[in-house]
Length: 361
Image (cartoon, rainbow, N blue to C red; front, top):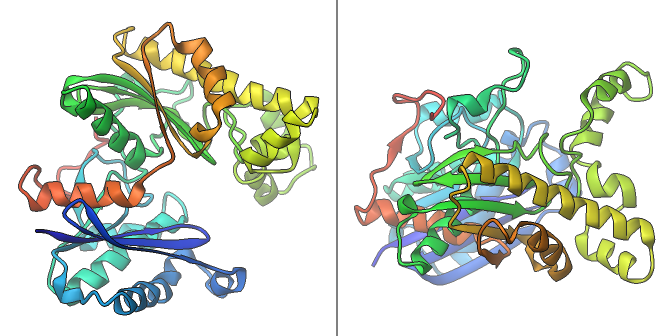
């Protein structure tokens, strides 16, 4: 038996679980109040506070660190890299602390895992971080040399559900072609060919608008808005990611609240939700061309996949491409543990961050 501790730091919570092989032995979520985190100038500065929370939860559950075989954390905004399980090292921690690609709670996963693992004398890992970049070279051009496309997505859940669905088909992840649409606060739609995620919209600034992100918007008008004097830089950045998309139209980021509005006769809410589904379906269609029409399954996953109306509106537009599989929600802790277990069992070899890294292409 292999015992793995998985840690997923979020913007308002710290989630953790202990797995004995695939069996979940303990799970805990600690919600953070605003003042808990506001005292920290940078996200990375939060790690001692969050480490103490995880350590306390293990103690209360009666799970000694000495019983662990590995600790795995959510991967953050690292340099572009191939998918897989990476052993946490000094280069990775330095890049996450520097946060050149942005501040995000997921940047804390590696340092918390490393500190806990070091005390237990076991390895620390991350799995399929948001920075996974397996895009083909042709997909990296945007139209302006100064603005290359970046691969930042829900790679952890997207690859995990792809492996799961492939297994249900009796195949390996490397034997299938999938389009995976992760439908959450951000929406990322990825093309998977033979075990690689060869294209994906950057969920922070491309593709469909989502509950709190504007997605792709008219570029010339955006430039004019930047110079209009209406917004300061920080305000407009927040408008694009944080208070854009559905929130900008309806004043809520909660898909359930928006659906209730639509069902109670709010025509604006109905058209906004329909437009978000329309844009999602259109992006799925675009990814079908990336795979030259050779699509084994379209997978709809993430929290919004619980919304049956949203799923139906997408499905009606894309079901001609390939059979649709709905895997609602996201099991990030399970996915993290599974990646660590593959290495512990010798099914995969842990990759070394910073070693032979290019763009992952």
